[in-house]
Length: 145
Image 1 (cartoon, helix red, strand yellow):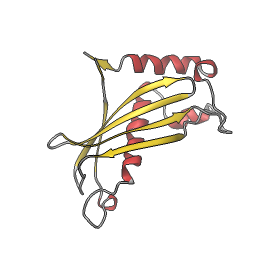
Image 2 (cartoon, rainbow, N blue to C red):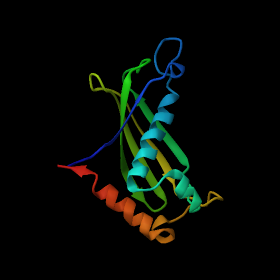
Image 3 (cartoon, rainbow, N blue to C red):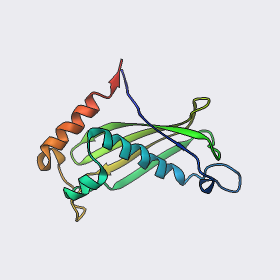
């Protein structure tokens, strides 16, 4: 079984390209955030709602492997899933594809820690058991045969 990848779609904007006419590498971190926030929204929450509860999810590590360039006006699909959730740590995984030919452009992951407003790590299962259950159900249900 492999993880089901939730999909977000968008176009490469002109301002995201460099002098070579390709999407600048720094945009991938922003695109990963699009996928991540969409994934969380599908649980029934927004980042804003999490913050109102006093929960933050800072990025502590980011990896990206660039495979092929995206160019201006390409329609992209970012596929997102959770690779791991243990203690205060949650790892989101991403694949970025060009829609017209399904070419894989990049793979990456971001590692986060659940924290309070003072950036003190939290055990989500103890602090917000209902939210932890929702996320766990979403993660366990994200596999396809």
